[in-house]
Length: 289
Ligand SMILES: C[S@@+](CC[C@H](N)C(=O)[O-])C[C@H]1O[C@@H](n2cnc3c(N)ncnc32)[C@H](O)[C@@H]1O
Image (cartoon, rainbow, N blue to C red; front, side, top):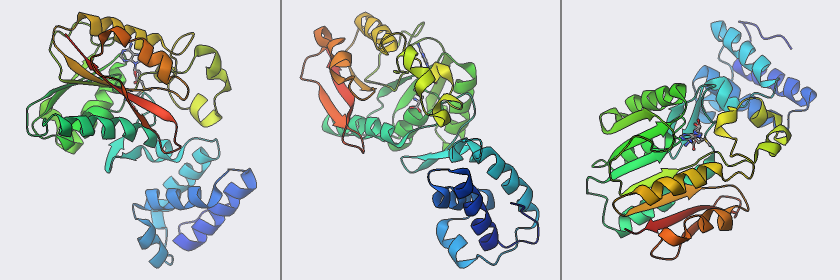
């Protein structure tokens, strides 16, 4: 396939779709459309009505984007952003590509915030393993009185999270800290959220290539049984001086094992939420003191 400056968007779309189909990509039509839309900076409707627009200089970045997608690099990484809970987040090779399933954490956390009447209160939030900052930034955007701490062992990830906080106008209420868990942070938190790494180390080599080759290992590797970081969070929870609500994402099949780690700390039965595929993927735990 050869894209040229004089080509129309419609012809480019057809050529890229054919190329992706030939290469065996699983969703060639969708991939081609998202790439063309993303590189041109237009939505599906605009592309549909304006197929005759000439590519011009855009043919070069589009050509590069096609070459990257042919290596199985996810579209979001090629474009450098991912939409999450209705907002756009920049991503870099240093952070996990946010997954739609993680919106479950936001939904469960906000349901609890509403039940407790916290929406208009200046609650304190912690996001452990913030990555691109999707959880902390989304909660701050949804809860204008709240403030948050976002931690990550990766300094590059904290930089991405803070850049996203700036872009969303919540930077003044977010403190990004490079640390393990909540180490060195003595604040009290009303709400702690986390989507930690939870894949058992031995399974990393068997992940799909778009995950294995493009998501950072430190965002995936949950130790020998996948539960290492949950145990670390469990130890930190024991040290807390005030009650908190903990909302955790975990992998398919890990609900009981994760919940059991906090069994002696909770006052009310754990509350679970399911992802878009119907799998239990998130728990809210009310930690007593
Ligand atoms: C699965 S990613 C989640 C990122 C983001 N919260 C999301 O949902 O897209 C896990 C993140 O936790 C970070 N991390 C791993 N171990 C950690 C630890 N012990 N303490 C803090 N962050 C950790 C990784 O660097 C990575 O950014």
